[in-house]
Structures are given as C-alpha cells and as structure tokens.
Length: 397
Ligand code: PLP
Image (cartoon, rainbow, N blue to C red; front, side):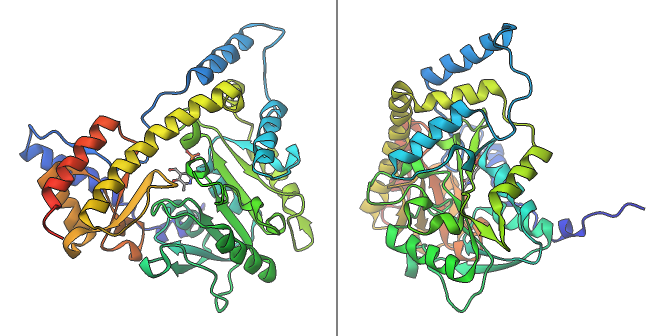
C-alpha cells in the first residue's frame, strides 16, 4: 500500500489570497459599480522590454533552422547567459565562476528544490513575517522551524540571536512582505553567525534590482565570508518582468562545504537528475537583459514602479503612518491606521476607498496590525488609490 507524505497534513491552509479574493468578490457583489483598485498584487504589470522581445523572437528563429536548432540544453543553463551573469556579479564587485551559477525556471522552484540536498533533521530559522514558501516547503519535508521576531523595534530586520542554533537560515533582502533591506553591517553579522555555527544562509535576492543606494548590498557575496556559508537565489521576474516567462538563477559557490562535501556538486547532481534546463528561447530573452540597451529599458520599468512606491510613501508620510519599505523595494509595509487589525483595515480600505491590499497577518503572527501595498500597479491607479486612501483615513490617525 502506498502511503502519503503525511507532512502535507501539517501545512497550514493558504487562506490569505483566497480570503482576499472572497472578501473582494463579496464587496463587488453588493457594490457592482465600485471601481476597485488592486494594490495587493505581487505580479508585475509592465510588458517585457523591446530588447527582450527581440531576443525571444531571434530564439524562435534559431529553432526554425537545422543549423541553429537546439534540443536538450545543459541542465544548469547555457554558457552565454551564465557568462552574462558572471559579468553582472563582477559589476557588484563579486567574482564568480560561471559554474557556480545555475539557471532555473524561477526563484520559487529553486527555493523549494534546494532542500533536496539538506538533511531533514536540519533546524530552520525563518523571520516572522515571512514569504510563505520558506515555511511550507520545509513543513513538507517535516523539518523543525524556529521563528525570529521581526517587528518595529528592529525595523523588521532581525539580527542573529546567539542563543538560537539554526542550520538553515532564510534571509530575504529587500524583503517580501516588509520591503525592509539589510545594510552591510547587518548582513555581516548574519554571515559571521552562519560561519561560526556551520549553518547555511539561503539568501533570497529576488528584489535586488530595487536597491537604489550603492552602499546597500545587492548580493550576499558582497559580504566577506559569504561564499563559505551562503546560497543565493535570484530571478528575472521582478528585474525584467519575467513572472510569466519564467527564468531565475541560483548561485552555489565552490567554497561552500558541509560535512566535508561541496554543495555545488550536490546541487549539480540534483539538477542534472531532476531538471532538464530552461527553454533556450527564454534563456536568450533573459540574457538580453544584460545588453546596454536591455539594462536601460529594464531600469525604466523599475523606475516606473519606484515612482509608484513614492506616491504611496508620500501619502503615508503626510498622514504620519509608520511604514518601512518602498525605497529599495516594490513593497510598502505599514501600521494600520487607528490601531485597526489587518483584516479590519482590509475591510475599511475596501469599503471607504475601494482599494484592495494585503493584510500583514497573512505573512505571520508579527504581521498582525500591519498591511502591505505594492507598487506594481499603473501610475494612474496608484495615484487614484492613494488619493482615496488619504481622503478616507486622513483625519482618523
Ligand atoms: N522570492 C520572493 C521573496 C518572492 O516574493 C517571489 C515572488 O513573488 C519569489 C521568490 C518567486 O520568484 P519567481 O517568480 O522567480 O519564482
């Protein structure tokens, strides 16, 4: 008789987005003429850059001719994109070997898949609030999870607690959902802690391109000692609008060893066994992001979202509402006005301003009383949503 993986029974129902959809649909039913604006989405809205489109077309053309047709490619990605990424890292002052870089179909898959190379009895440390994928993927394997409190007292950027011994540590910076971003000194503390404890940091850099201050790290490898304790995950999703096109990458340094084995070798073995590589056409499109024209066009899109973030934070500033994020991140995380609970504020915002956001408590206990808005909508909708927000909550706080 086949048995199920009973760990799946321990995964909490992901009710956050379904509850948001349910409440929004119910409101729409009773207010059919309401012009609802959604600032809860974590998906991008700008189309792919023209350079990327051109590269995708040329990839398709390659597939049409016998001399340039591609069948199975290298599981870990074509050299042309790995070399572009190597140069991209060099611009940040990080020297990588191309074979330390693995091309994937997105950060989410690799964040889950990487757990294949770690023992199930590793203790996992995640901040709370947190991107739910870290918690659910470890719960599926039955690993013990320890939570680290992120709150206003540490600006939602918790630092290592020497009394907690953890083997796998998740750090997401700039953070989803809080938008908070670690500085060099803070990340150095994490790297030192991981090296001292022989832990491994799983560093999620999905939003690195939103960092707009050169003094802040975009990669954990900008921190001395990180190559012996960290794996980095990144994505073209938010950098270049690839949420629907699917491409990302994972860096596993040769210097990273545990139990006397190189994790790079383990990951290569895992990938070549269970993964058959990202579509050639998509890799062509992704590589074009690193051309001069590609970089310029991508930056224009990121700046568009950053202007939306500023519209949101300017409103919160005027209303005197505490928030973090928005500056180096598409996410703005704020305390609900009038000490409302997350869901109470969700309903009030929908009712009074016809705006949909994401209740903070959906990301963990410490999200209670907080709320997340994103800058991925259009400028017009963001402006109108925040005009309504200000009108509705301007005098209440
Ligand atoms: N990591 C974080 C923190 C995210 O917020 C997301 C997507 O929203 C991802 C990873 C997933 O990225 P991808 O689209 O590359 O799978």
